[in-house]
Figure 1 (tube, rainbow, N blue to C red):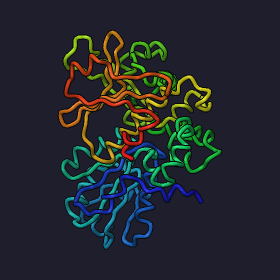
Figure 2 (cartoon, rainbow, N blue to C red; figure 1 turned 90 degrees about the vertical axis):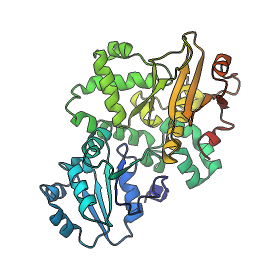
Figure 3 (spheres, rainbow, N blue to C red; figure 1 turned 90 degrees about the horizontal axis):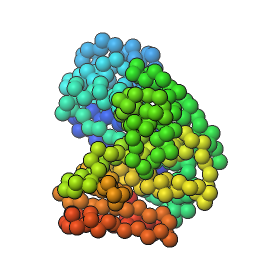
Length: 377
């Protein structure tokens, strides 16, 4: 039996509360949404489960009225709808429950933001709470196996990532990642009618995988993939909504030399990134370890700020003469600048022009010696 089901996820607090609002859990396929709900509710007696993957459950909701819903729910106090985006007009159905059936805890999950979020946003205005569930985080694993052991496994995580099934099946990482890439990664995207060229989508993802930590040019990506620039941009937006990649924009405010329209793109899981380019070499043999480290820190910080409801805007910073900072947060009116360092030999510092231009900012070098504080440990 896989022990992954016993790992406590950071979003589980609040999911059992009856708040009068629908709880919407979105995140990548295979990130553990269904496992989390089974962990929380399998021992509860008054739970009614539905799945959008099941034709019978889909048919149950077709044309349903509030009266019929009341009879269907009966004495149950928790309603779970997995893969809810596959149920026709799911937003209206959830609205019927929140408006007409009180004291019921309703939870809906979906694996694609462009499907589920779009379907519930208008219907559930003021009636929902959204939760993002990502692949496992560094902190979740520290809480599970201890800081010392997770630090020992860090080089392994930088290569194989944090998908739950990957973490729980050591020795089978390559096969599992290949299965995720081939069977799940594109499942929602290719079903969406704007995506028709799966071979070019794979080329785009591979090109992005080679460019993590670098500024990306839609024009350059278009030449590599033989796609128009606006098509490249729209595909990347869709990849973001499917929780495969995410963008970081350039910070600019005072300097003429600051880049204004640039962006970096990172992956939501490094195992997926490495699988896309078929590179599972150990970190001692890699020439991209600095980029993996940067992606790891930006991603884990994103998980930390999201799970702990730390509201901030996130950027990188660079000037036309190549002065740069890896990561910036604009939080409560203060700028926090972070430069990432993997190699102990390499000297890293915050550019003086930044601290002079933004004298009230705070800055820090994040290395292997102190990164855990940056990630909330």
